[in-house]
Amino acid sequence: MLIDPFKRKISYIRVSVTDRCDFRCTYCMPQKMKFLPRDNLLSLEELERLCNVFIELGVKKIRITGGEPLVRKNIVQLFKGISNNLGNGLEELTLTTNGSQLEHHAEELFNAGVKRINVSLDTLDKNKFKLITKFDNFDKVMRGIHAAKKIGMKIKINAVALKDINDNEILDLVKWCGENQFTLTFIEVMPMGEMGKRRIDQFMPLLEIKKLLEKNYKIVDDPLKTGGPASYVHCNETDQKIGFITPLTHNFCDSCNRVRITCTGKMYMCLGQEDKEDLIKPLRDSDNNDLLKEVIYKAILRKPKGHDFAIGREKKEKFVPRHMNVTGG
Image (tube, rainbow, N blue to C red; front, side):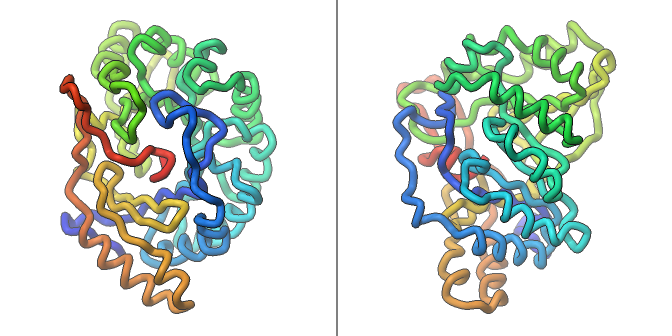
C-alpha cells in the first residue's frame, strides 16, 4: 500500500496515454499547441506494465486520460491488457474523453471492462461548442455519448463553468443530464499553462451555480465518493447526482488519494505542484519491478498536502507552467 506523509492511502492513478487532442478548448490549450514527438511517449506495453505495478502496490482505480486518449493508435489494446486485473486487485478501469471518438470505440471499450466514463462537455449549444473547442464536432460528440449510453455505460458529464460563455446554460445542462440519467459535474477553471488570456475573465465560482440550483430545485448533500475530488448533491426533481470540483474556492486536498502519470512516464504527486518523479529510467533499465516500486515508494513520501491554485486580479496572473493535456486530466 502506498501511503503519503499525511497518512492518505494512494489507491487511484490517472494515466495519460498522449498529450495530443483533436480539440483546442479555450481554457485548456493554445490553438497552435506544440505536441511531443511520438517517440517520447511510453509504449502501450510500458504503460500496461506501469499500471500493473501500481495495482500490485494497492491501486484500486485507474483512469486513462490524455490529451484525448482515444486518438492514440491501438489504445483499446491497453484497456484490454489492464482489464485482466479487474477483480484481482483492480476495482475499476475508467476513462475521461471529449467524446469525439466514442461513436467508434464505445462497444469495444465496454467489452474491455470500461463500464463508466467521464465526458468533457461544456455546452449544449452547437455554435458555442465550436467557439469553445475550435472544432465543429458537436453532433459527432452527441452521437458518441448516446452510443456509450446505448451500450450500457454509466456516463458523467464534466462541464467547466465559464463566465459569460456557458453560465446561462446551467439549468439546461441539469435538465438534459437528468433526462438521460447522466451524473453532472461542474468544474472551476484551473490555472494550468499559459493561454495568452487572463483566466480571471473566464472564472465562475461554483457557489454561484449552487445558489442557482437551490432556487430552482430541491437539492440535498449526497455522500457519494468516486475517488475523485468532487463533492455531490442529489437533485430530487431530476433524480440525478450533481458534482462540484472547486480547486479555487474550496480546497479539496485533504482526502486526496491519487497521483498522475504522464504519457512520458513522469509521476506528478500533485496536479497543482511541479514536483515529479521520472519513472522511465527504472521502467526501462530493468525488468525487475522491485526497483520500480522502490522509486514509486520514495516519491509518494514527497506528496504535498495540497495544491497552490489561485486566480487573482494581479496584472501578472499566476499559473502552473504546464498545460492540463501534458499532465493528464
